Amino acid sequence: MSEQPRPRHHRPLLPGAARFDTLPGDVDPAARSEVADRCATLLVRGGHGTEDEAVVTRVVHLAETEGLDSLADLWSRSVPDSLAGCLWRLYLLRSWVHADPVGASREFDAGRRHTPVHEVVAGVVDPPGPQEVRRLADEVLRGVVQGDFADTLYRAAAFARVVAAGRAFDDPDLPGGAPYGSPHESALSASRLVTMAEQLERAAGLEIEGHLT
Image (cartoon, rainbow, N blue to C red; front, side, top):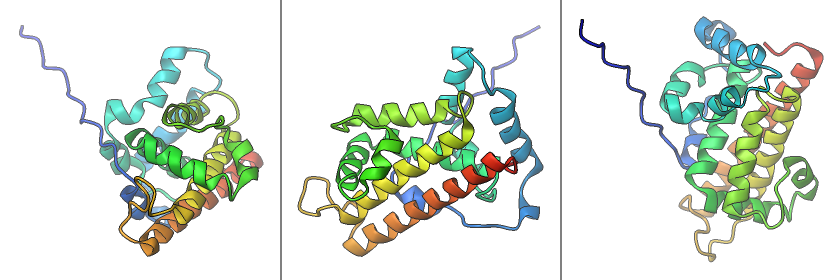
């Protein structure tokens, strides 16, 4: 009997900041896919507290192994204050950081001058280079199954707020500055990141209350 071909994973799509511009807003809860909710619940609740490094690594690298487009098909239409909606935002944030670590570190460095209190929560070392912001993005995803999930959401939100501030105040004369076409477009993109941060913070509050599902 011939061996069956192994299923092939989609190549991961590692987007730039333009992905944030297509992030959907609130949708009717009835439109959420049952499979999306069940997968999100299994990922967050089923593996919580595991010490198995192989499991943690699979969670962190899920966007690479399954493809970000596959995760988008699964979770991008989920409401923000749900486990599925939170996971989509966490993986989207990490994918952008890994796709453009130089830009992410530059925007974080600029943003921390305007939002110093959030820098402590976000947890990036000084100076925040490309390796440091990539490491932080991975550490945030580890929090999905290790540690407190509400803290994970707050930490991701804090990072998004710092980057948003840096994006809004980015100097267009610096190398790589204002990569979004115009100051207006940079401000608009930054505003969407702030919205993401607010959604993650709201979800973290629900998690603390035991109402995030």
